Image (cartoon, rainbow, N blue to C red; front, side, top):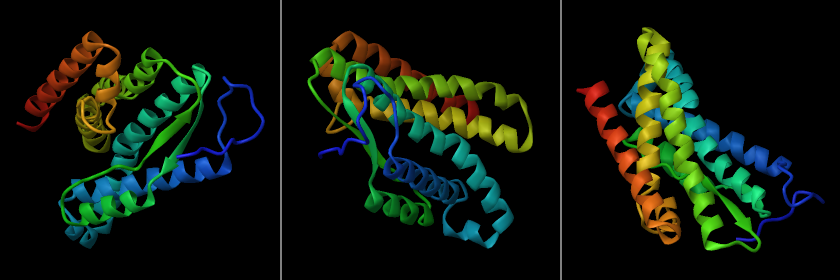
Length: 210
């Protein structure tokens, strides 16, 4: 997909067009709704507006930020390598995410960062791994919230679980997922990142849900 240049800019300048900011905001809100419905067990949670609002705020802080910072990490690293890069929301997939949430399950592919320009296999791999690594960092950042009760405790639980899961899922070496690009670049980097992501996800599930 061709990305329109935002304006005349140096190759390493990080900037956002109005359209890109709009796409980021819409994706963030749509994911917040989708995950709030999922956290609440489906559309029935709408019968309790107060609880839905709580879950919406939790999902905006945890799942929404996790997805968006994942994509922005791709953008920042791509630009550092001299690429033109921009996030583009996938509106059809965002609608599907909300519908899935109404059904009590989740399927979220909010969009992607598209970049263009000359690039090496190594640089492409580093751009790809930046997303999952960002989710791993976020997972650890949410750990301190686990000691709090109430709203902050929910933020901790979902922030840890979702971000570790996002890291592991995106490292699967299949299709457009980041793992395939990382594996093409470096088997060792792929192995370490994938194994660490899977292990942390398993520990989070066992420690927080069981």
